[in-house]
Length: 360
Image 1 (spheres, helix red, strand yellow):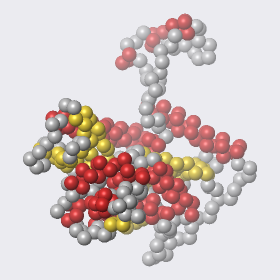
Image 2 (tube, helix red, strand yellow):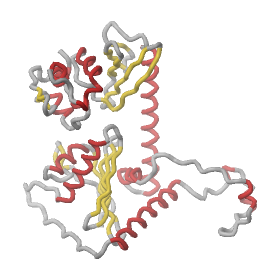
Image 3 (spheres, one colour):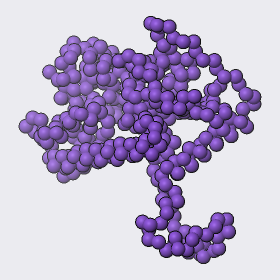
Image 4 (cartoon, rainbow, N blue to C red):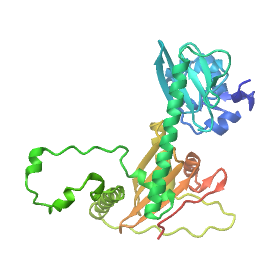
């Protein structure tokens, strides 16, 4: 019996709604959208392949992969990435598990499915594909790249937090306003360099003769980040001041919550959470999502980062002030709860309120 079937061997799948009552689907797959094959547990895979109606149109391209995982008695792999490769005349798809603590990689070739344990560096069972050496090399190269990238991001967040003397959660907000890639600055034309500078004063010639490590750093990373955030704030302030017909009253604060009372989400939060969930469902596979909404209080930017498990919201008010909120973990559960009337503080482990570093 497969691990997916062990928790509930008599799972009752519902192919029409792509749901099942087994433990694997309830705990691990229920939040995936209908078009995502990771929603399919072992019971749904078997029911859909045996159905005379065949697979739904949105899952039809995955038919061969579903046949292969059915041979292992598994549901569709819950993965964070799928890496295709070609070696020795064979093609293979390597599924990296969503949980980075798991080391079992599902490898699908056109003929059959295999399981490779990256931690033990062994193939489960007696058989392994002809392209096994290439698969092993690619798997460990990807894992090393992810580990190095994770260390770089953690070090960058720590340095930002130390430089600004704010919590690390607040430093993570900068990623929602910083471009994902840096564009190199082109070299200036020699003819342009020969022209006299009129708009700006010349630098001290002695300073220009210094070696590269000794020259003063005119633009540091923090200054560039401050410039970007300043431009965004000015643009939002311009839209608020000049584009709105008339000022709108502030929404009164909610009354204090009574003991035992369930904290509910306001309609605006529910609408924001619903829009973000729709955006995630329409664009699966990304690590970061951001939406912008105009409310009576100002402009709201709501975003989430699945790699860091951070949900954040920034409110830019008409007077230029900002309110930032950061929630750690349970991104999908918080958003789903907000659409059903709860607040973003609700998690399966109870209330976990947001961090508000600049709360007025």
